[in-house]
Image (cartoon, rainbow over all chains, first blue to last red; front, side, top):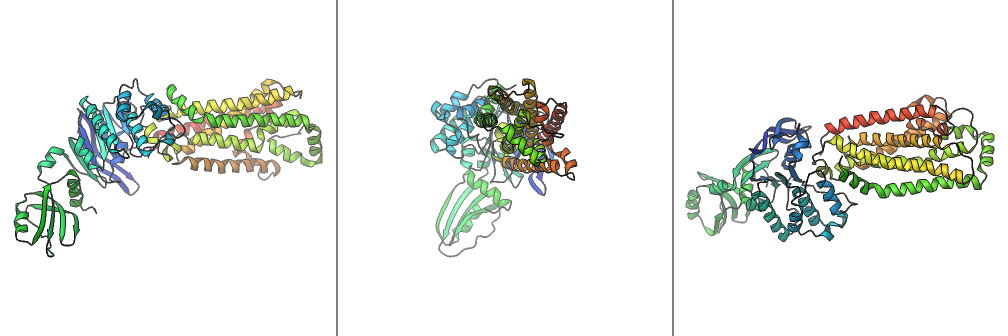
Length: 298
Length: 268
């Protein structure tokens, strides 16, 4: 069964097309990373899935329920961490999660989530206006997780978290996933997707560029190359090698490649190379490679 | 019904409600005490004889011959500009909190992602805000009654105060529902409060000027203040009930439109 299914999902605001024909399938029980730069359409997609906004055309289903017509039932099965997280200012953290949890029958994962996020009872008894950005994010994660939802939608989940709590969050997410919860995670921080997700979708300017498993992406022989020449050299177009620039300085280049490395190495062997670093690309570089391929400004 | 949500909303709003209510009660008691201490009946009687009847009638929103007695004086308390400004401002602020303020302060994504329809969420909000307004307006009426009674001013019967209080409550509900309606369309709470301020300032001006100038008088139909007639309630005039029904009608229409608009709007 699919946890998330969208068919030609489109959302326009006047002339601005926030989302164009999104076709997405996320299988139940998986961790899906939804990657895109700010303004790419990630939050719009999530709001459409939850039925908070209405599509211009197309449709979406979450856990088999229509987002537009069965929004209330659908939302009882979802835990949601908004990207632009804000809380009511004149109440305590505990009041807030109590109120947000009052819509569900039970809150079996609250204690566990509070422990993972290192939110003590005294922290929860403080008014949320006194909270730092990181504490607000922790409270946001707790409220999303506490009712043990079958689907967890997290929009930029590690924003503002310190490295220690980030690690705790990853462990919590892995534990929740093992229990069968599907995690749909929107982010532009690629390392967290690399750490958690099995599948990745990349979105740019409202269009889905690709959906692939992280393992398959790695198998596509993506490499990150940094090369410095002793004199000025222009990189030519090489057959079978796709090059996406990641940066350039005087007489040196950094770029991501996909495909066979042999033509590139053969070319470089005839050039005045001062230094060469070639390593397996990280997801960051692959993401930038896709963005560059689609003509985006980096 | 979600009691957790209602308790949360009460916790959010009780401080303001408490301050406004204490202010109203103090104001009411001070009015009654001033009437007793400064021989207001005689003083205001002289003012009426000196040609001030028209302006008094316009301020009270009443017609016909004006008797300067304790009922007229107490009706002034309900229609006093300071009290009206505070009541309208508070009701507008409560009404702006449901959608516009939630969107403006970015809490909408949290609340509206819960498994409850927007209409039900609005109904919860209405129940809490309505209860706070009811307690405030009724306590204000009772404070005027018991204040006048304790100073031996021989006030009208308690039922008349109850009707005046009920009318005041429904007036506040009408303000609240118009704020909901604007809030269902606007993106920020302060925009709603600002628009409500402008709208009700215009209505009050029409009410006051219309009471003095015949050319503007027909426009009074469009001012909600025209239907706020505590003087009619205290003098047991049947028009008090008619005015109450008009306010109730406005409330019903504005609330119904708010429900429809809220179901249709995009929350972003």
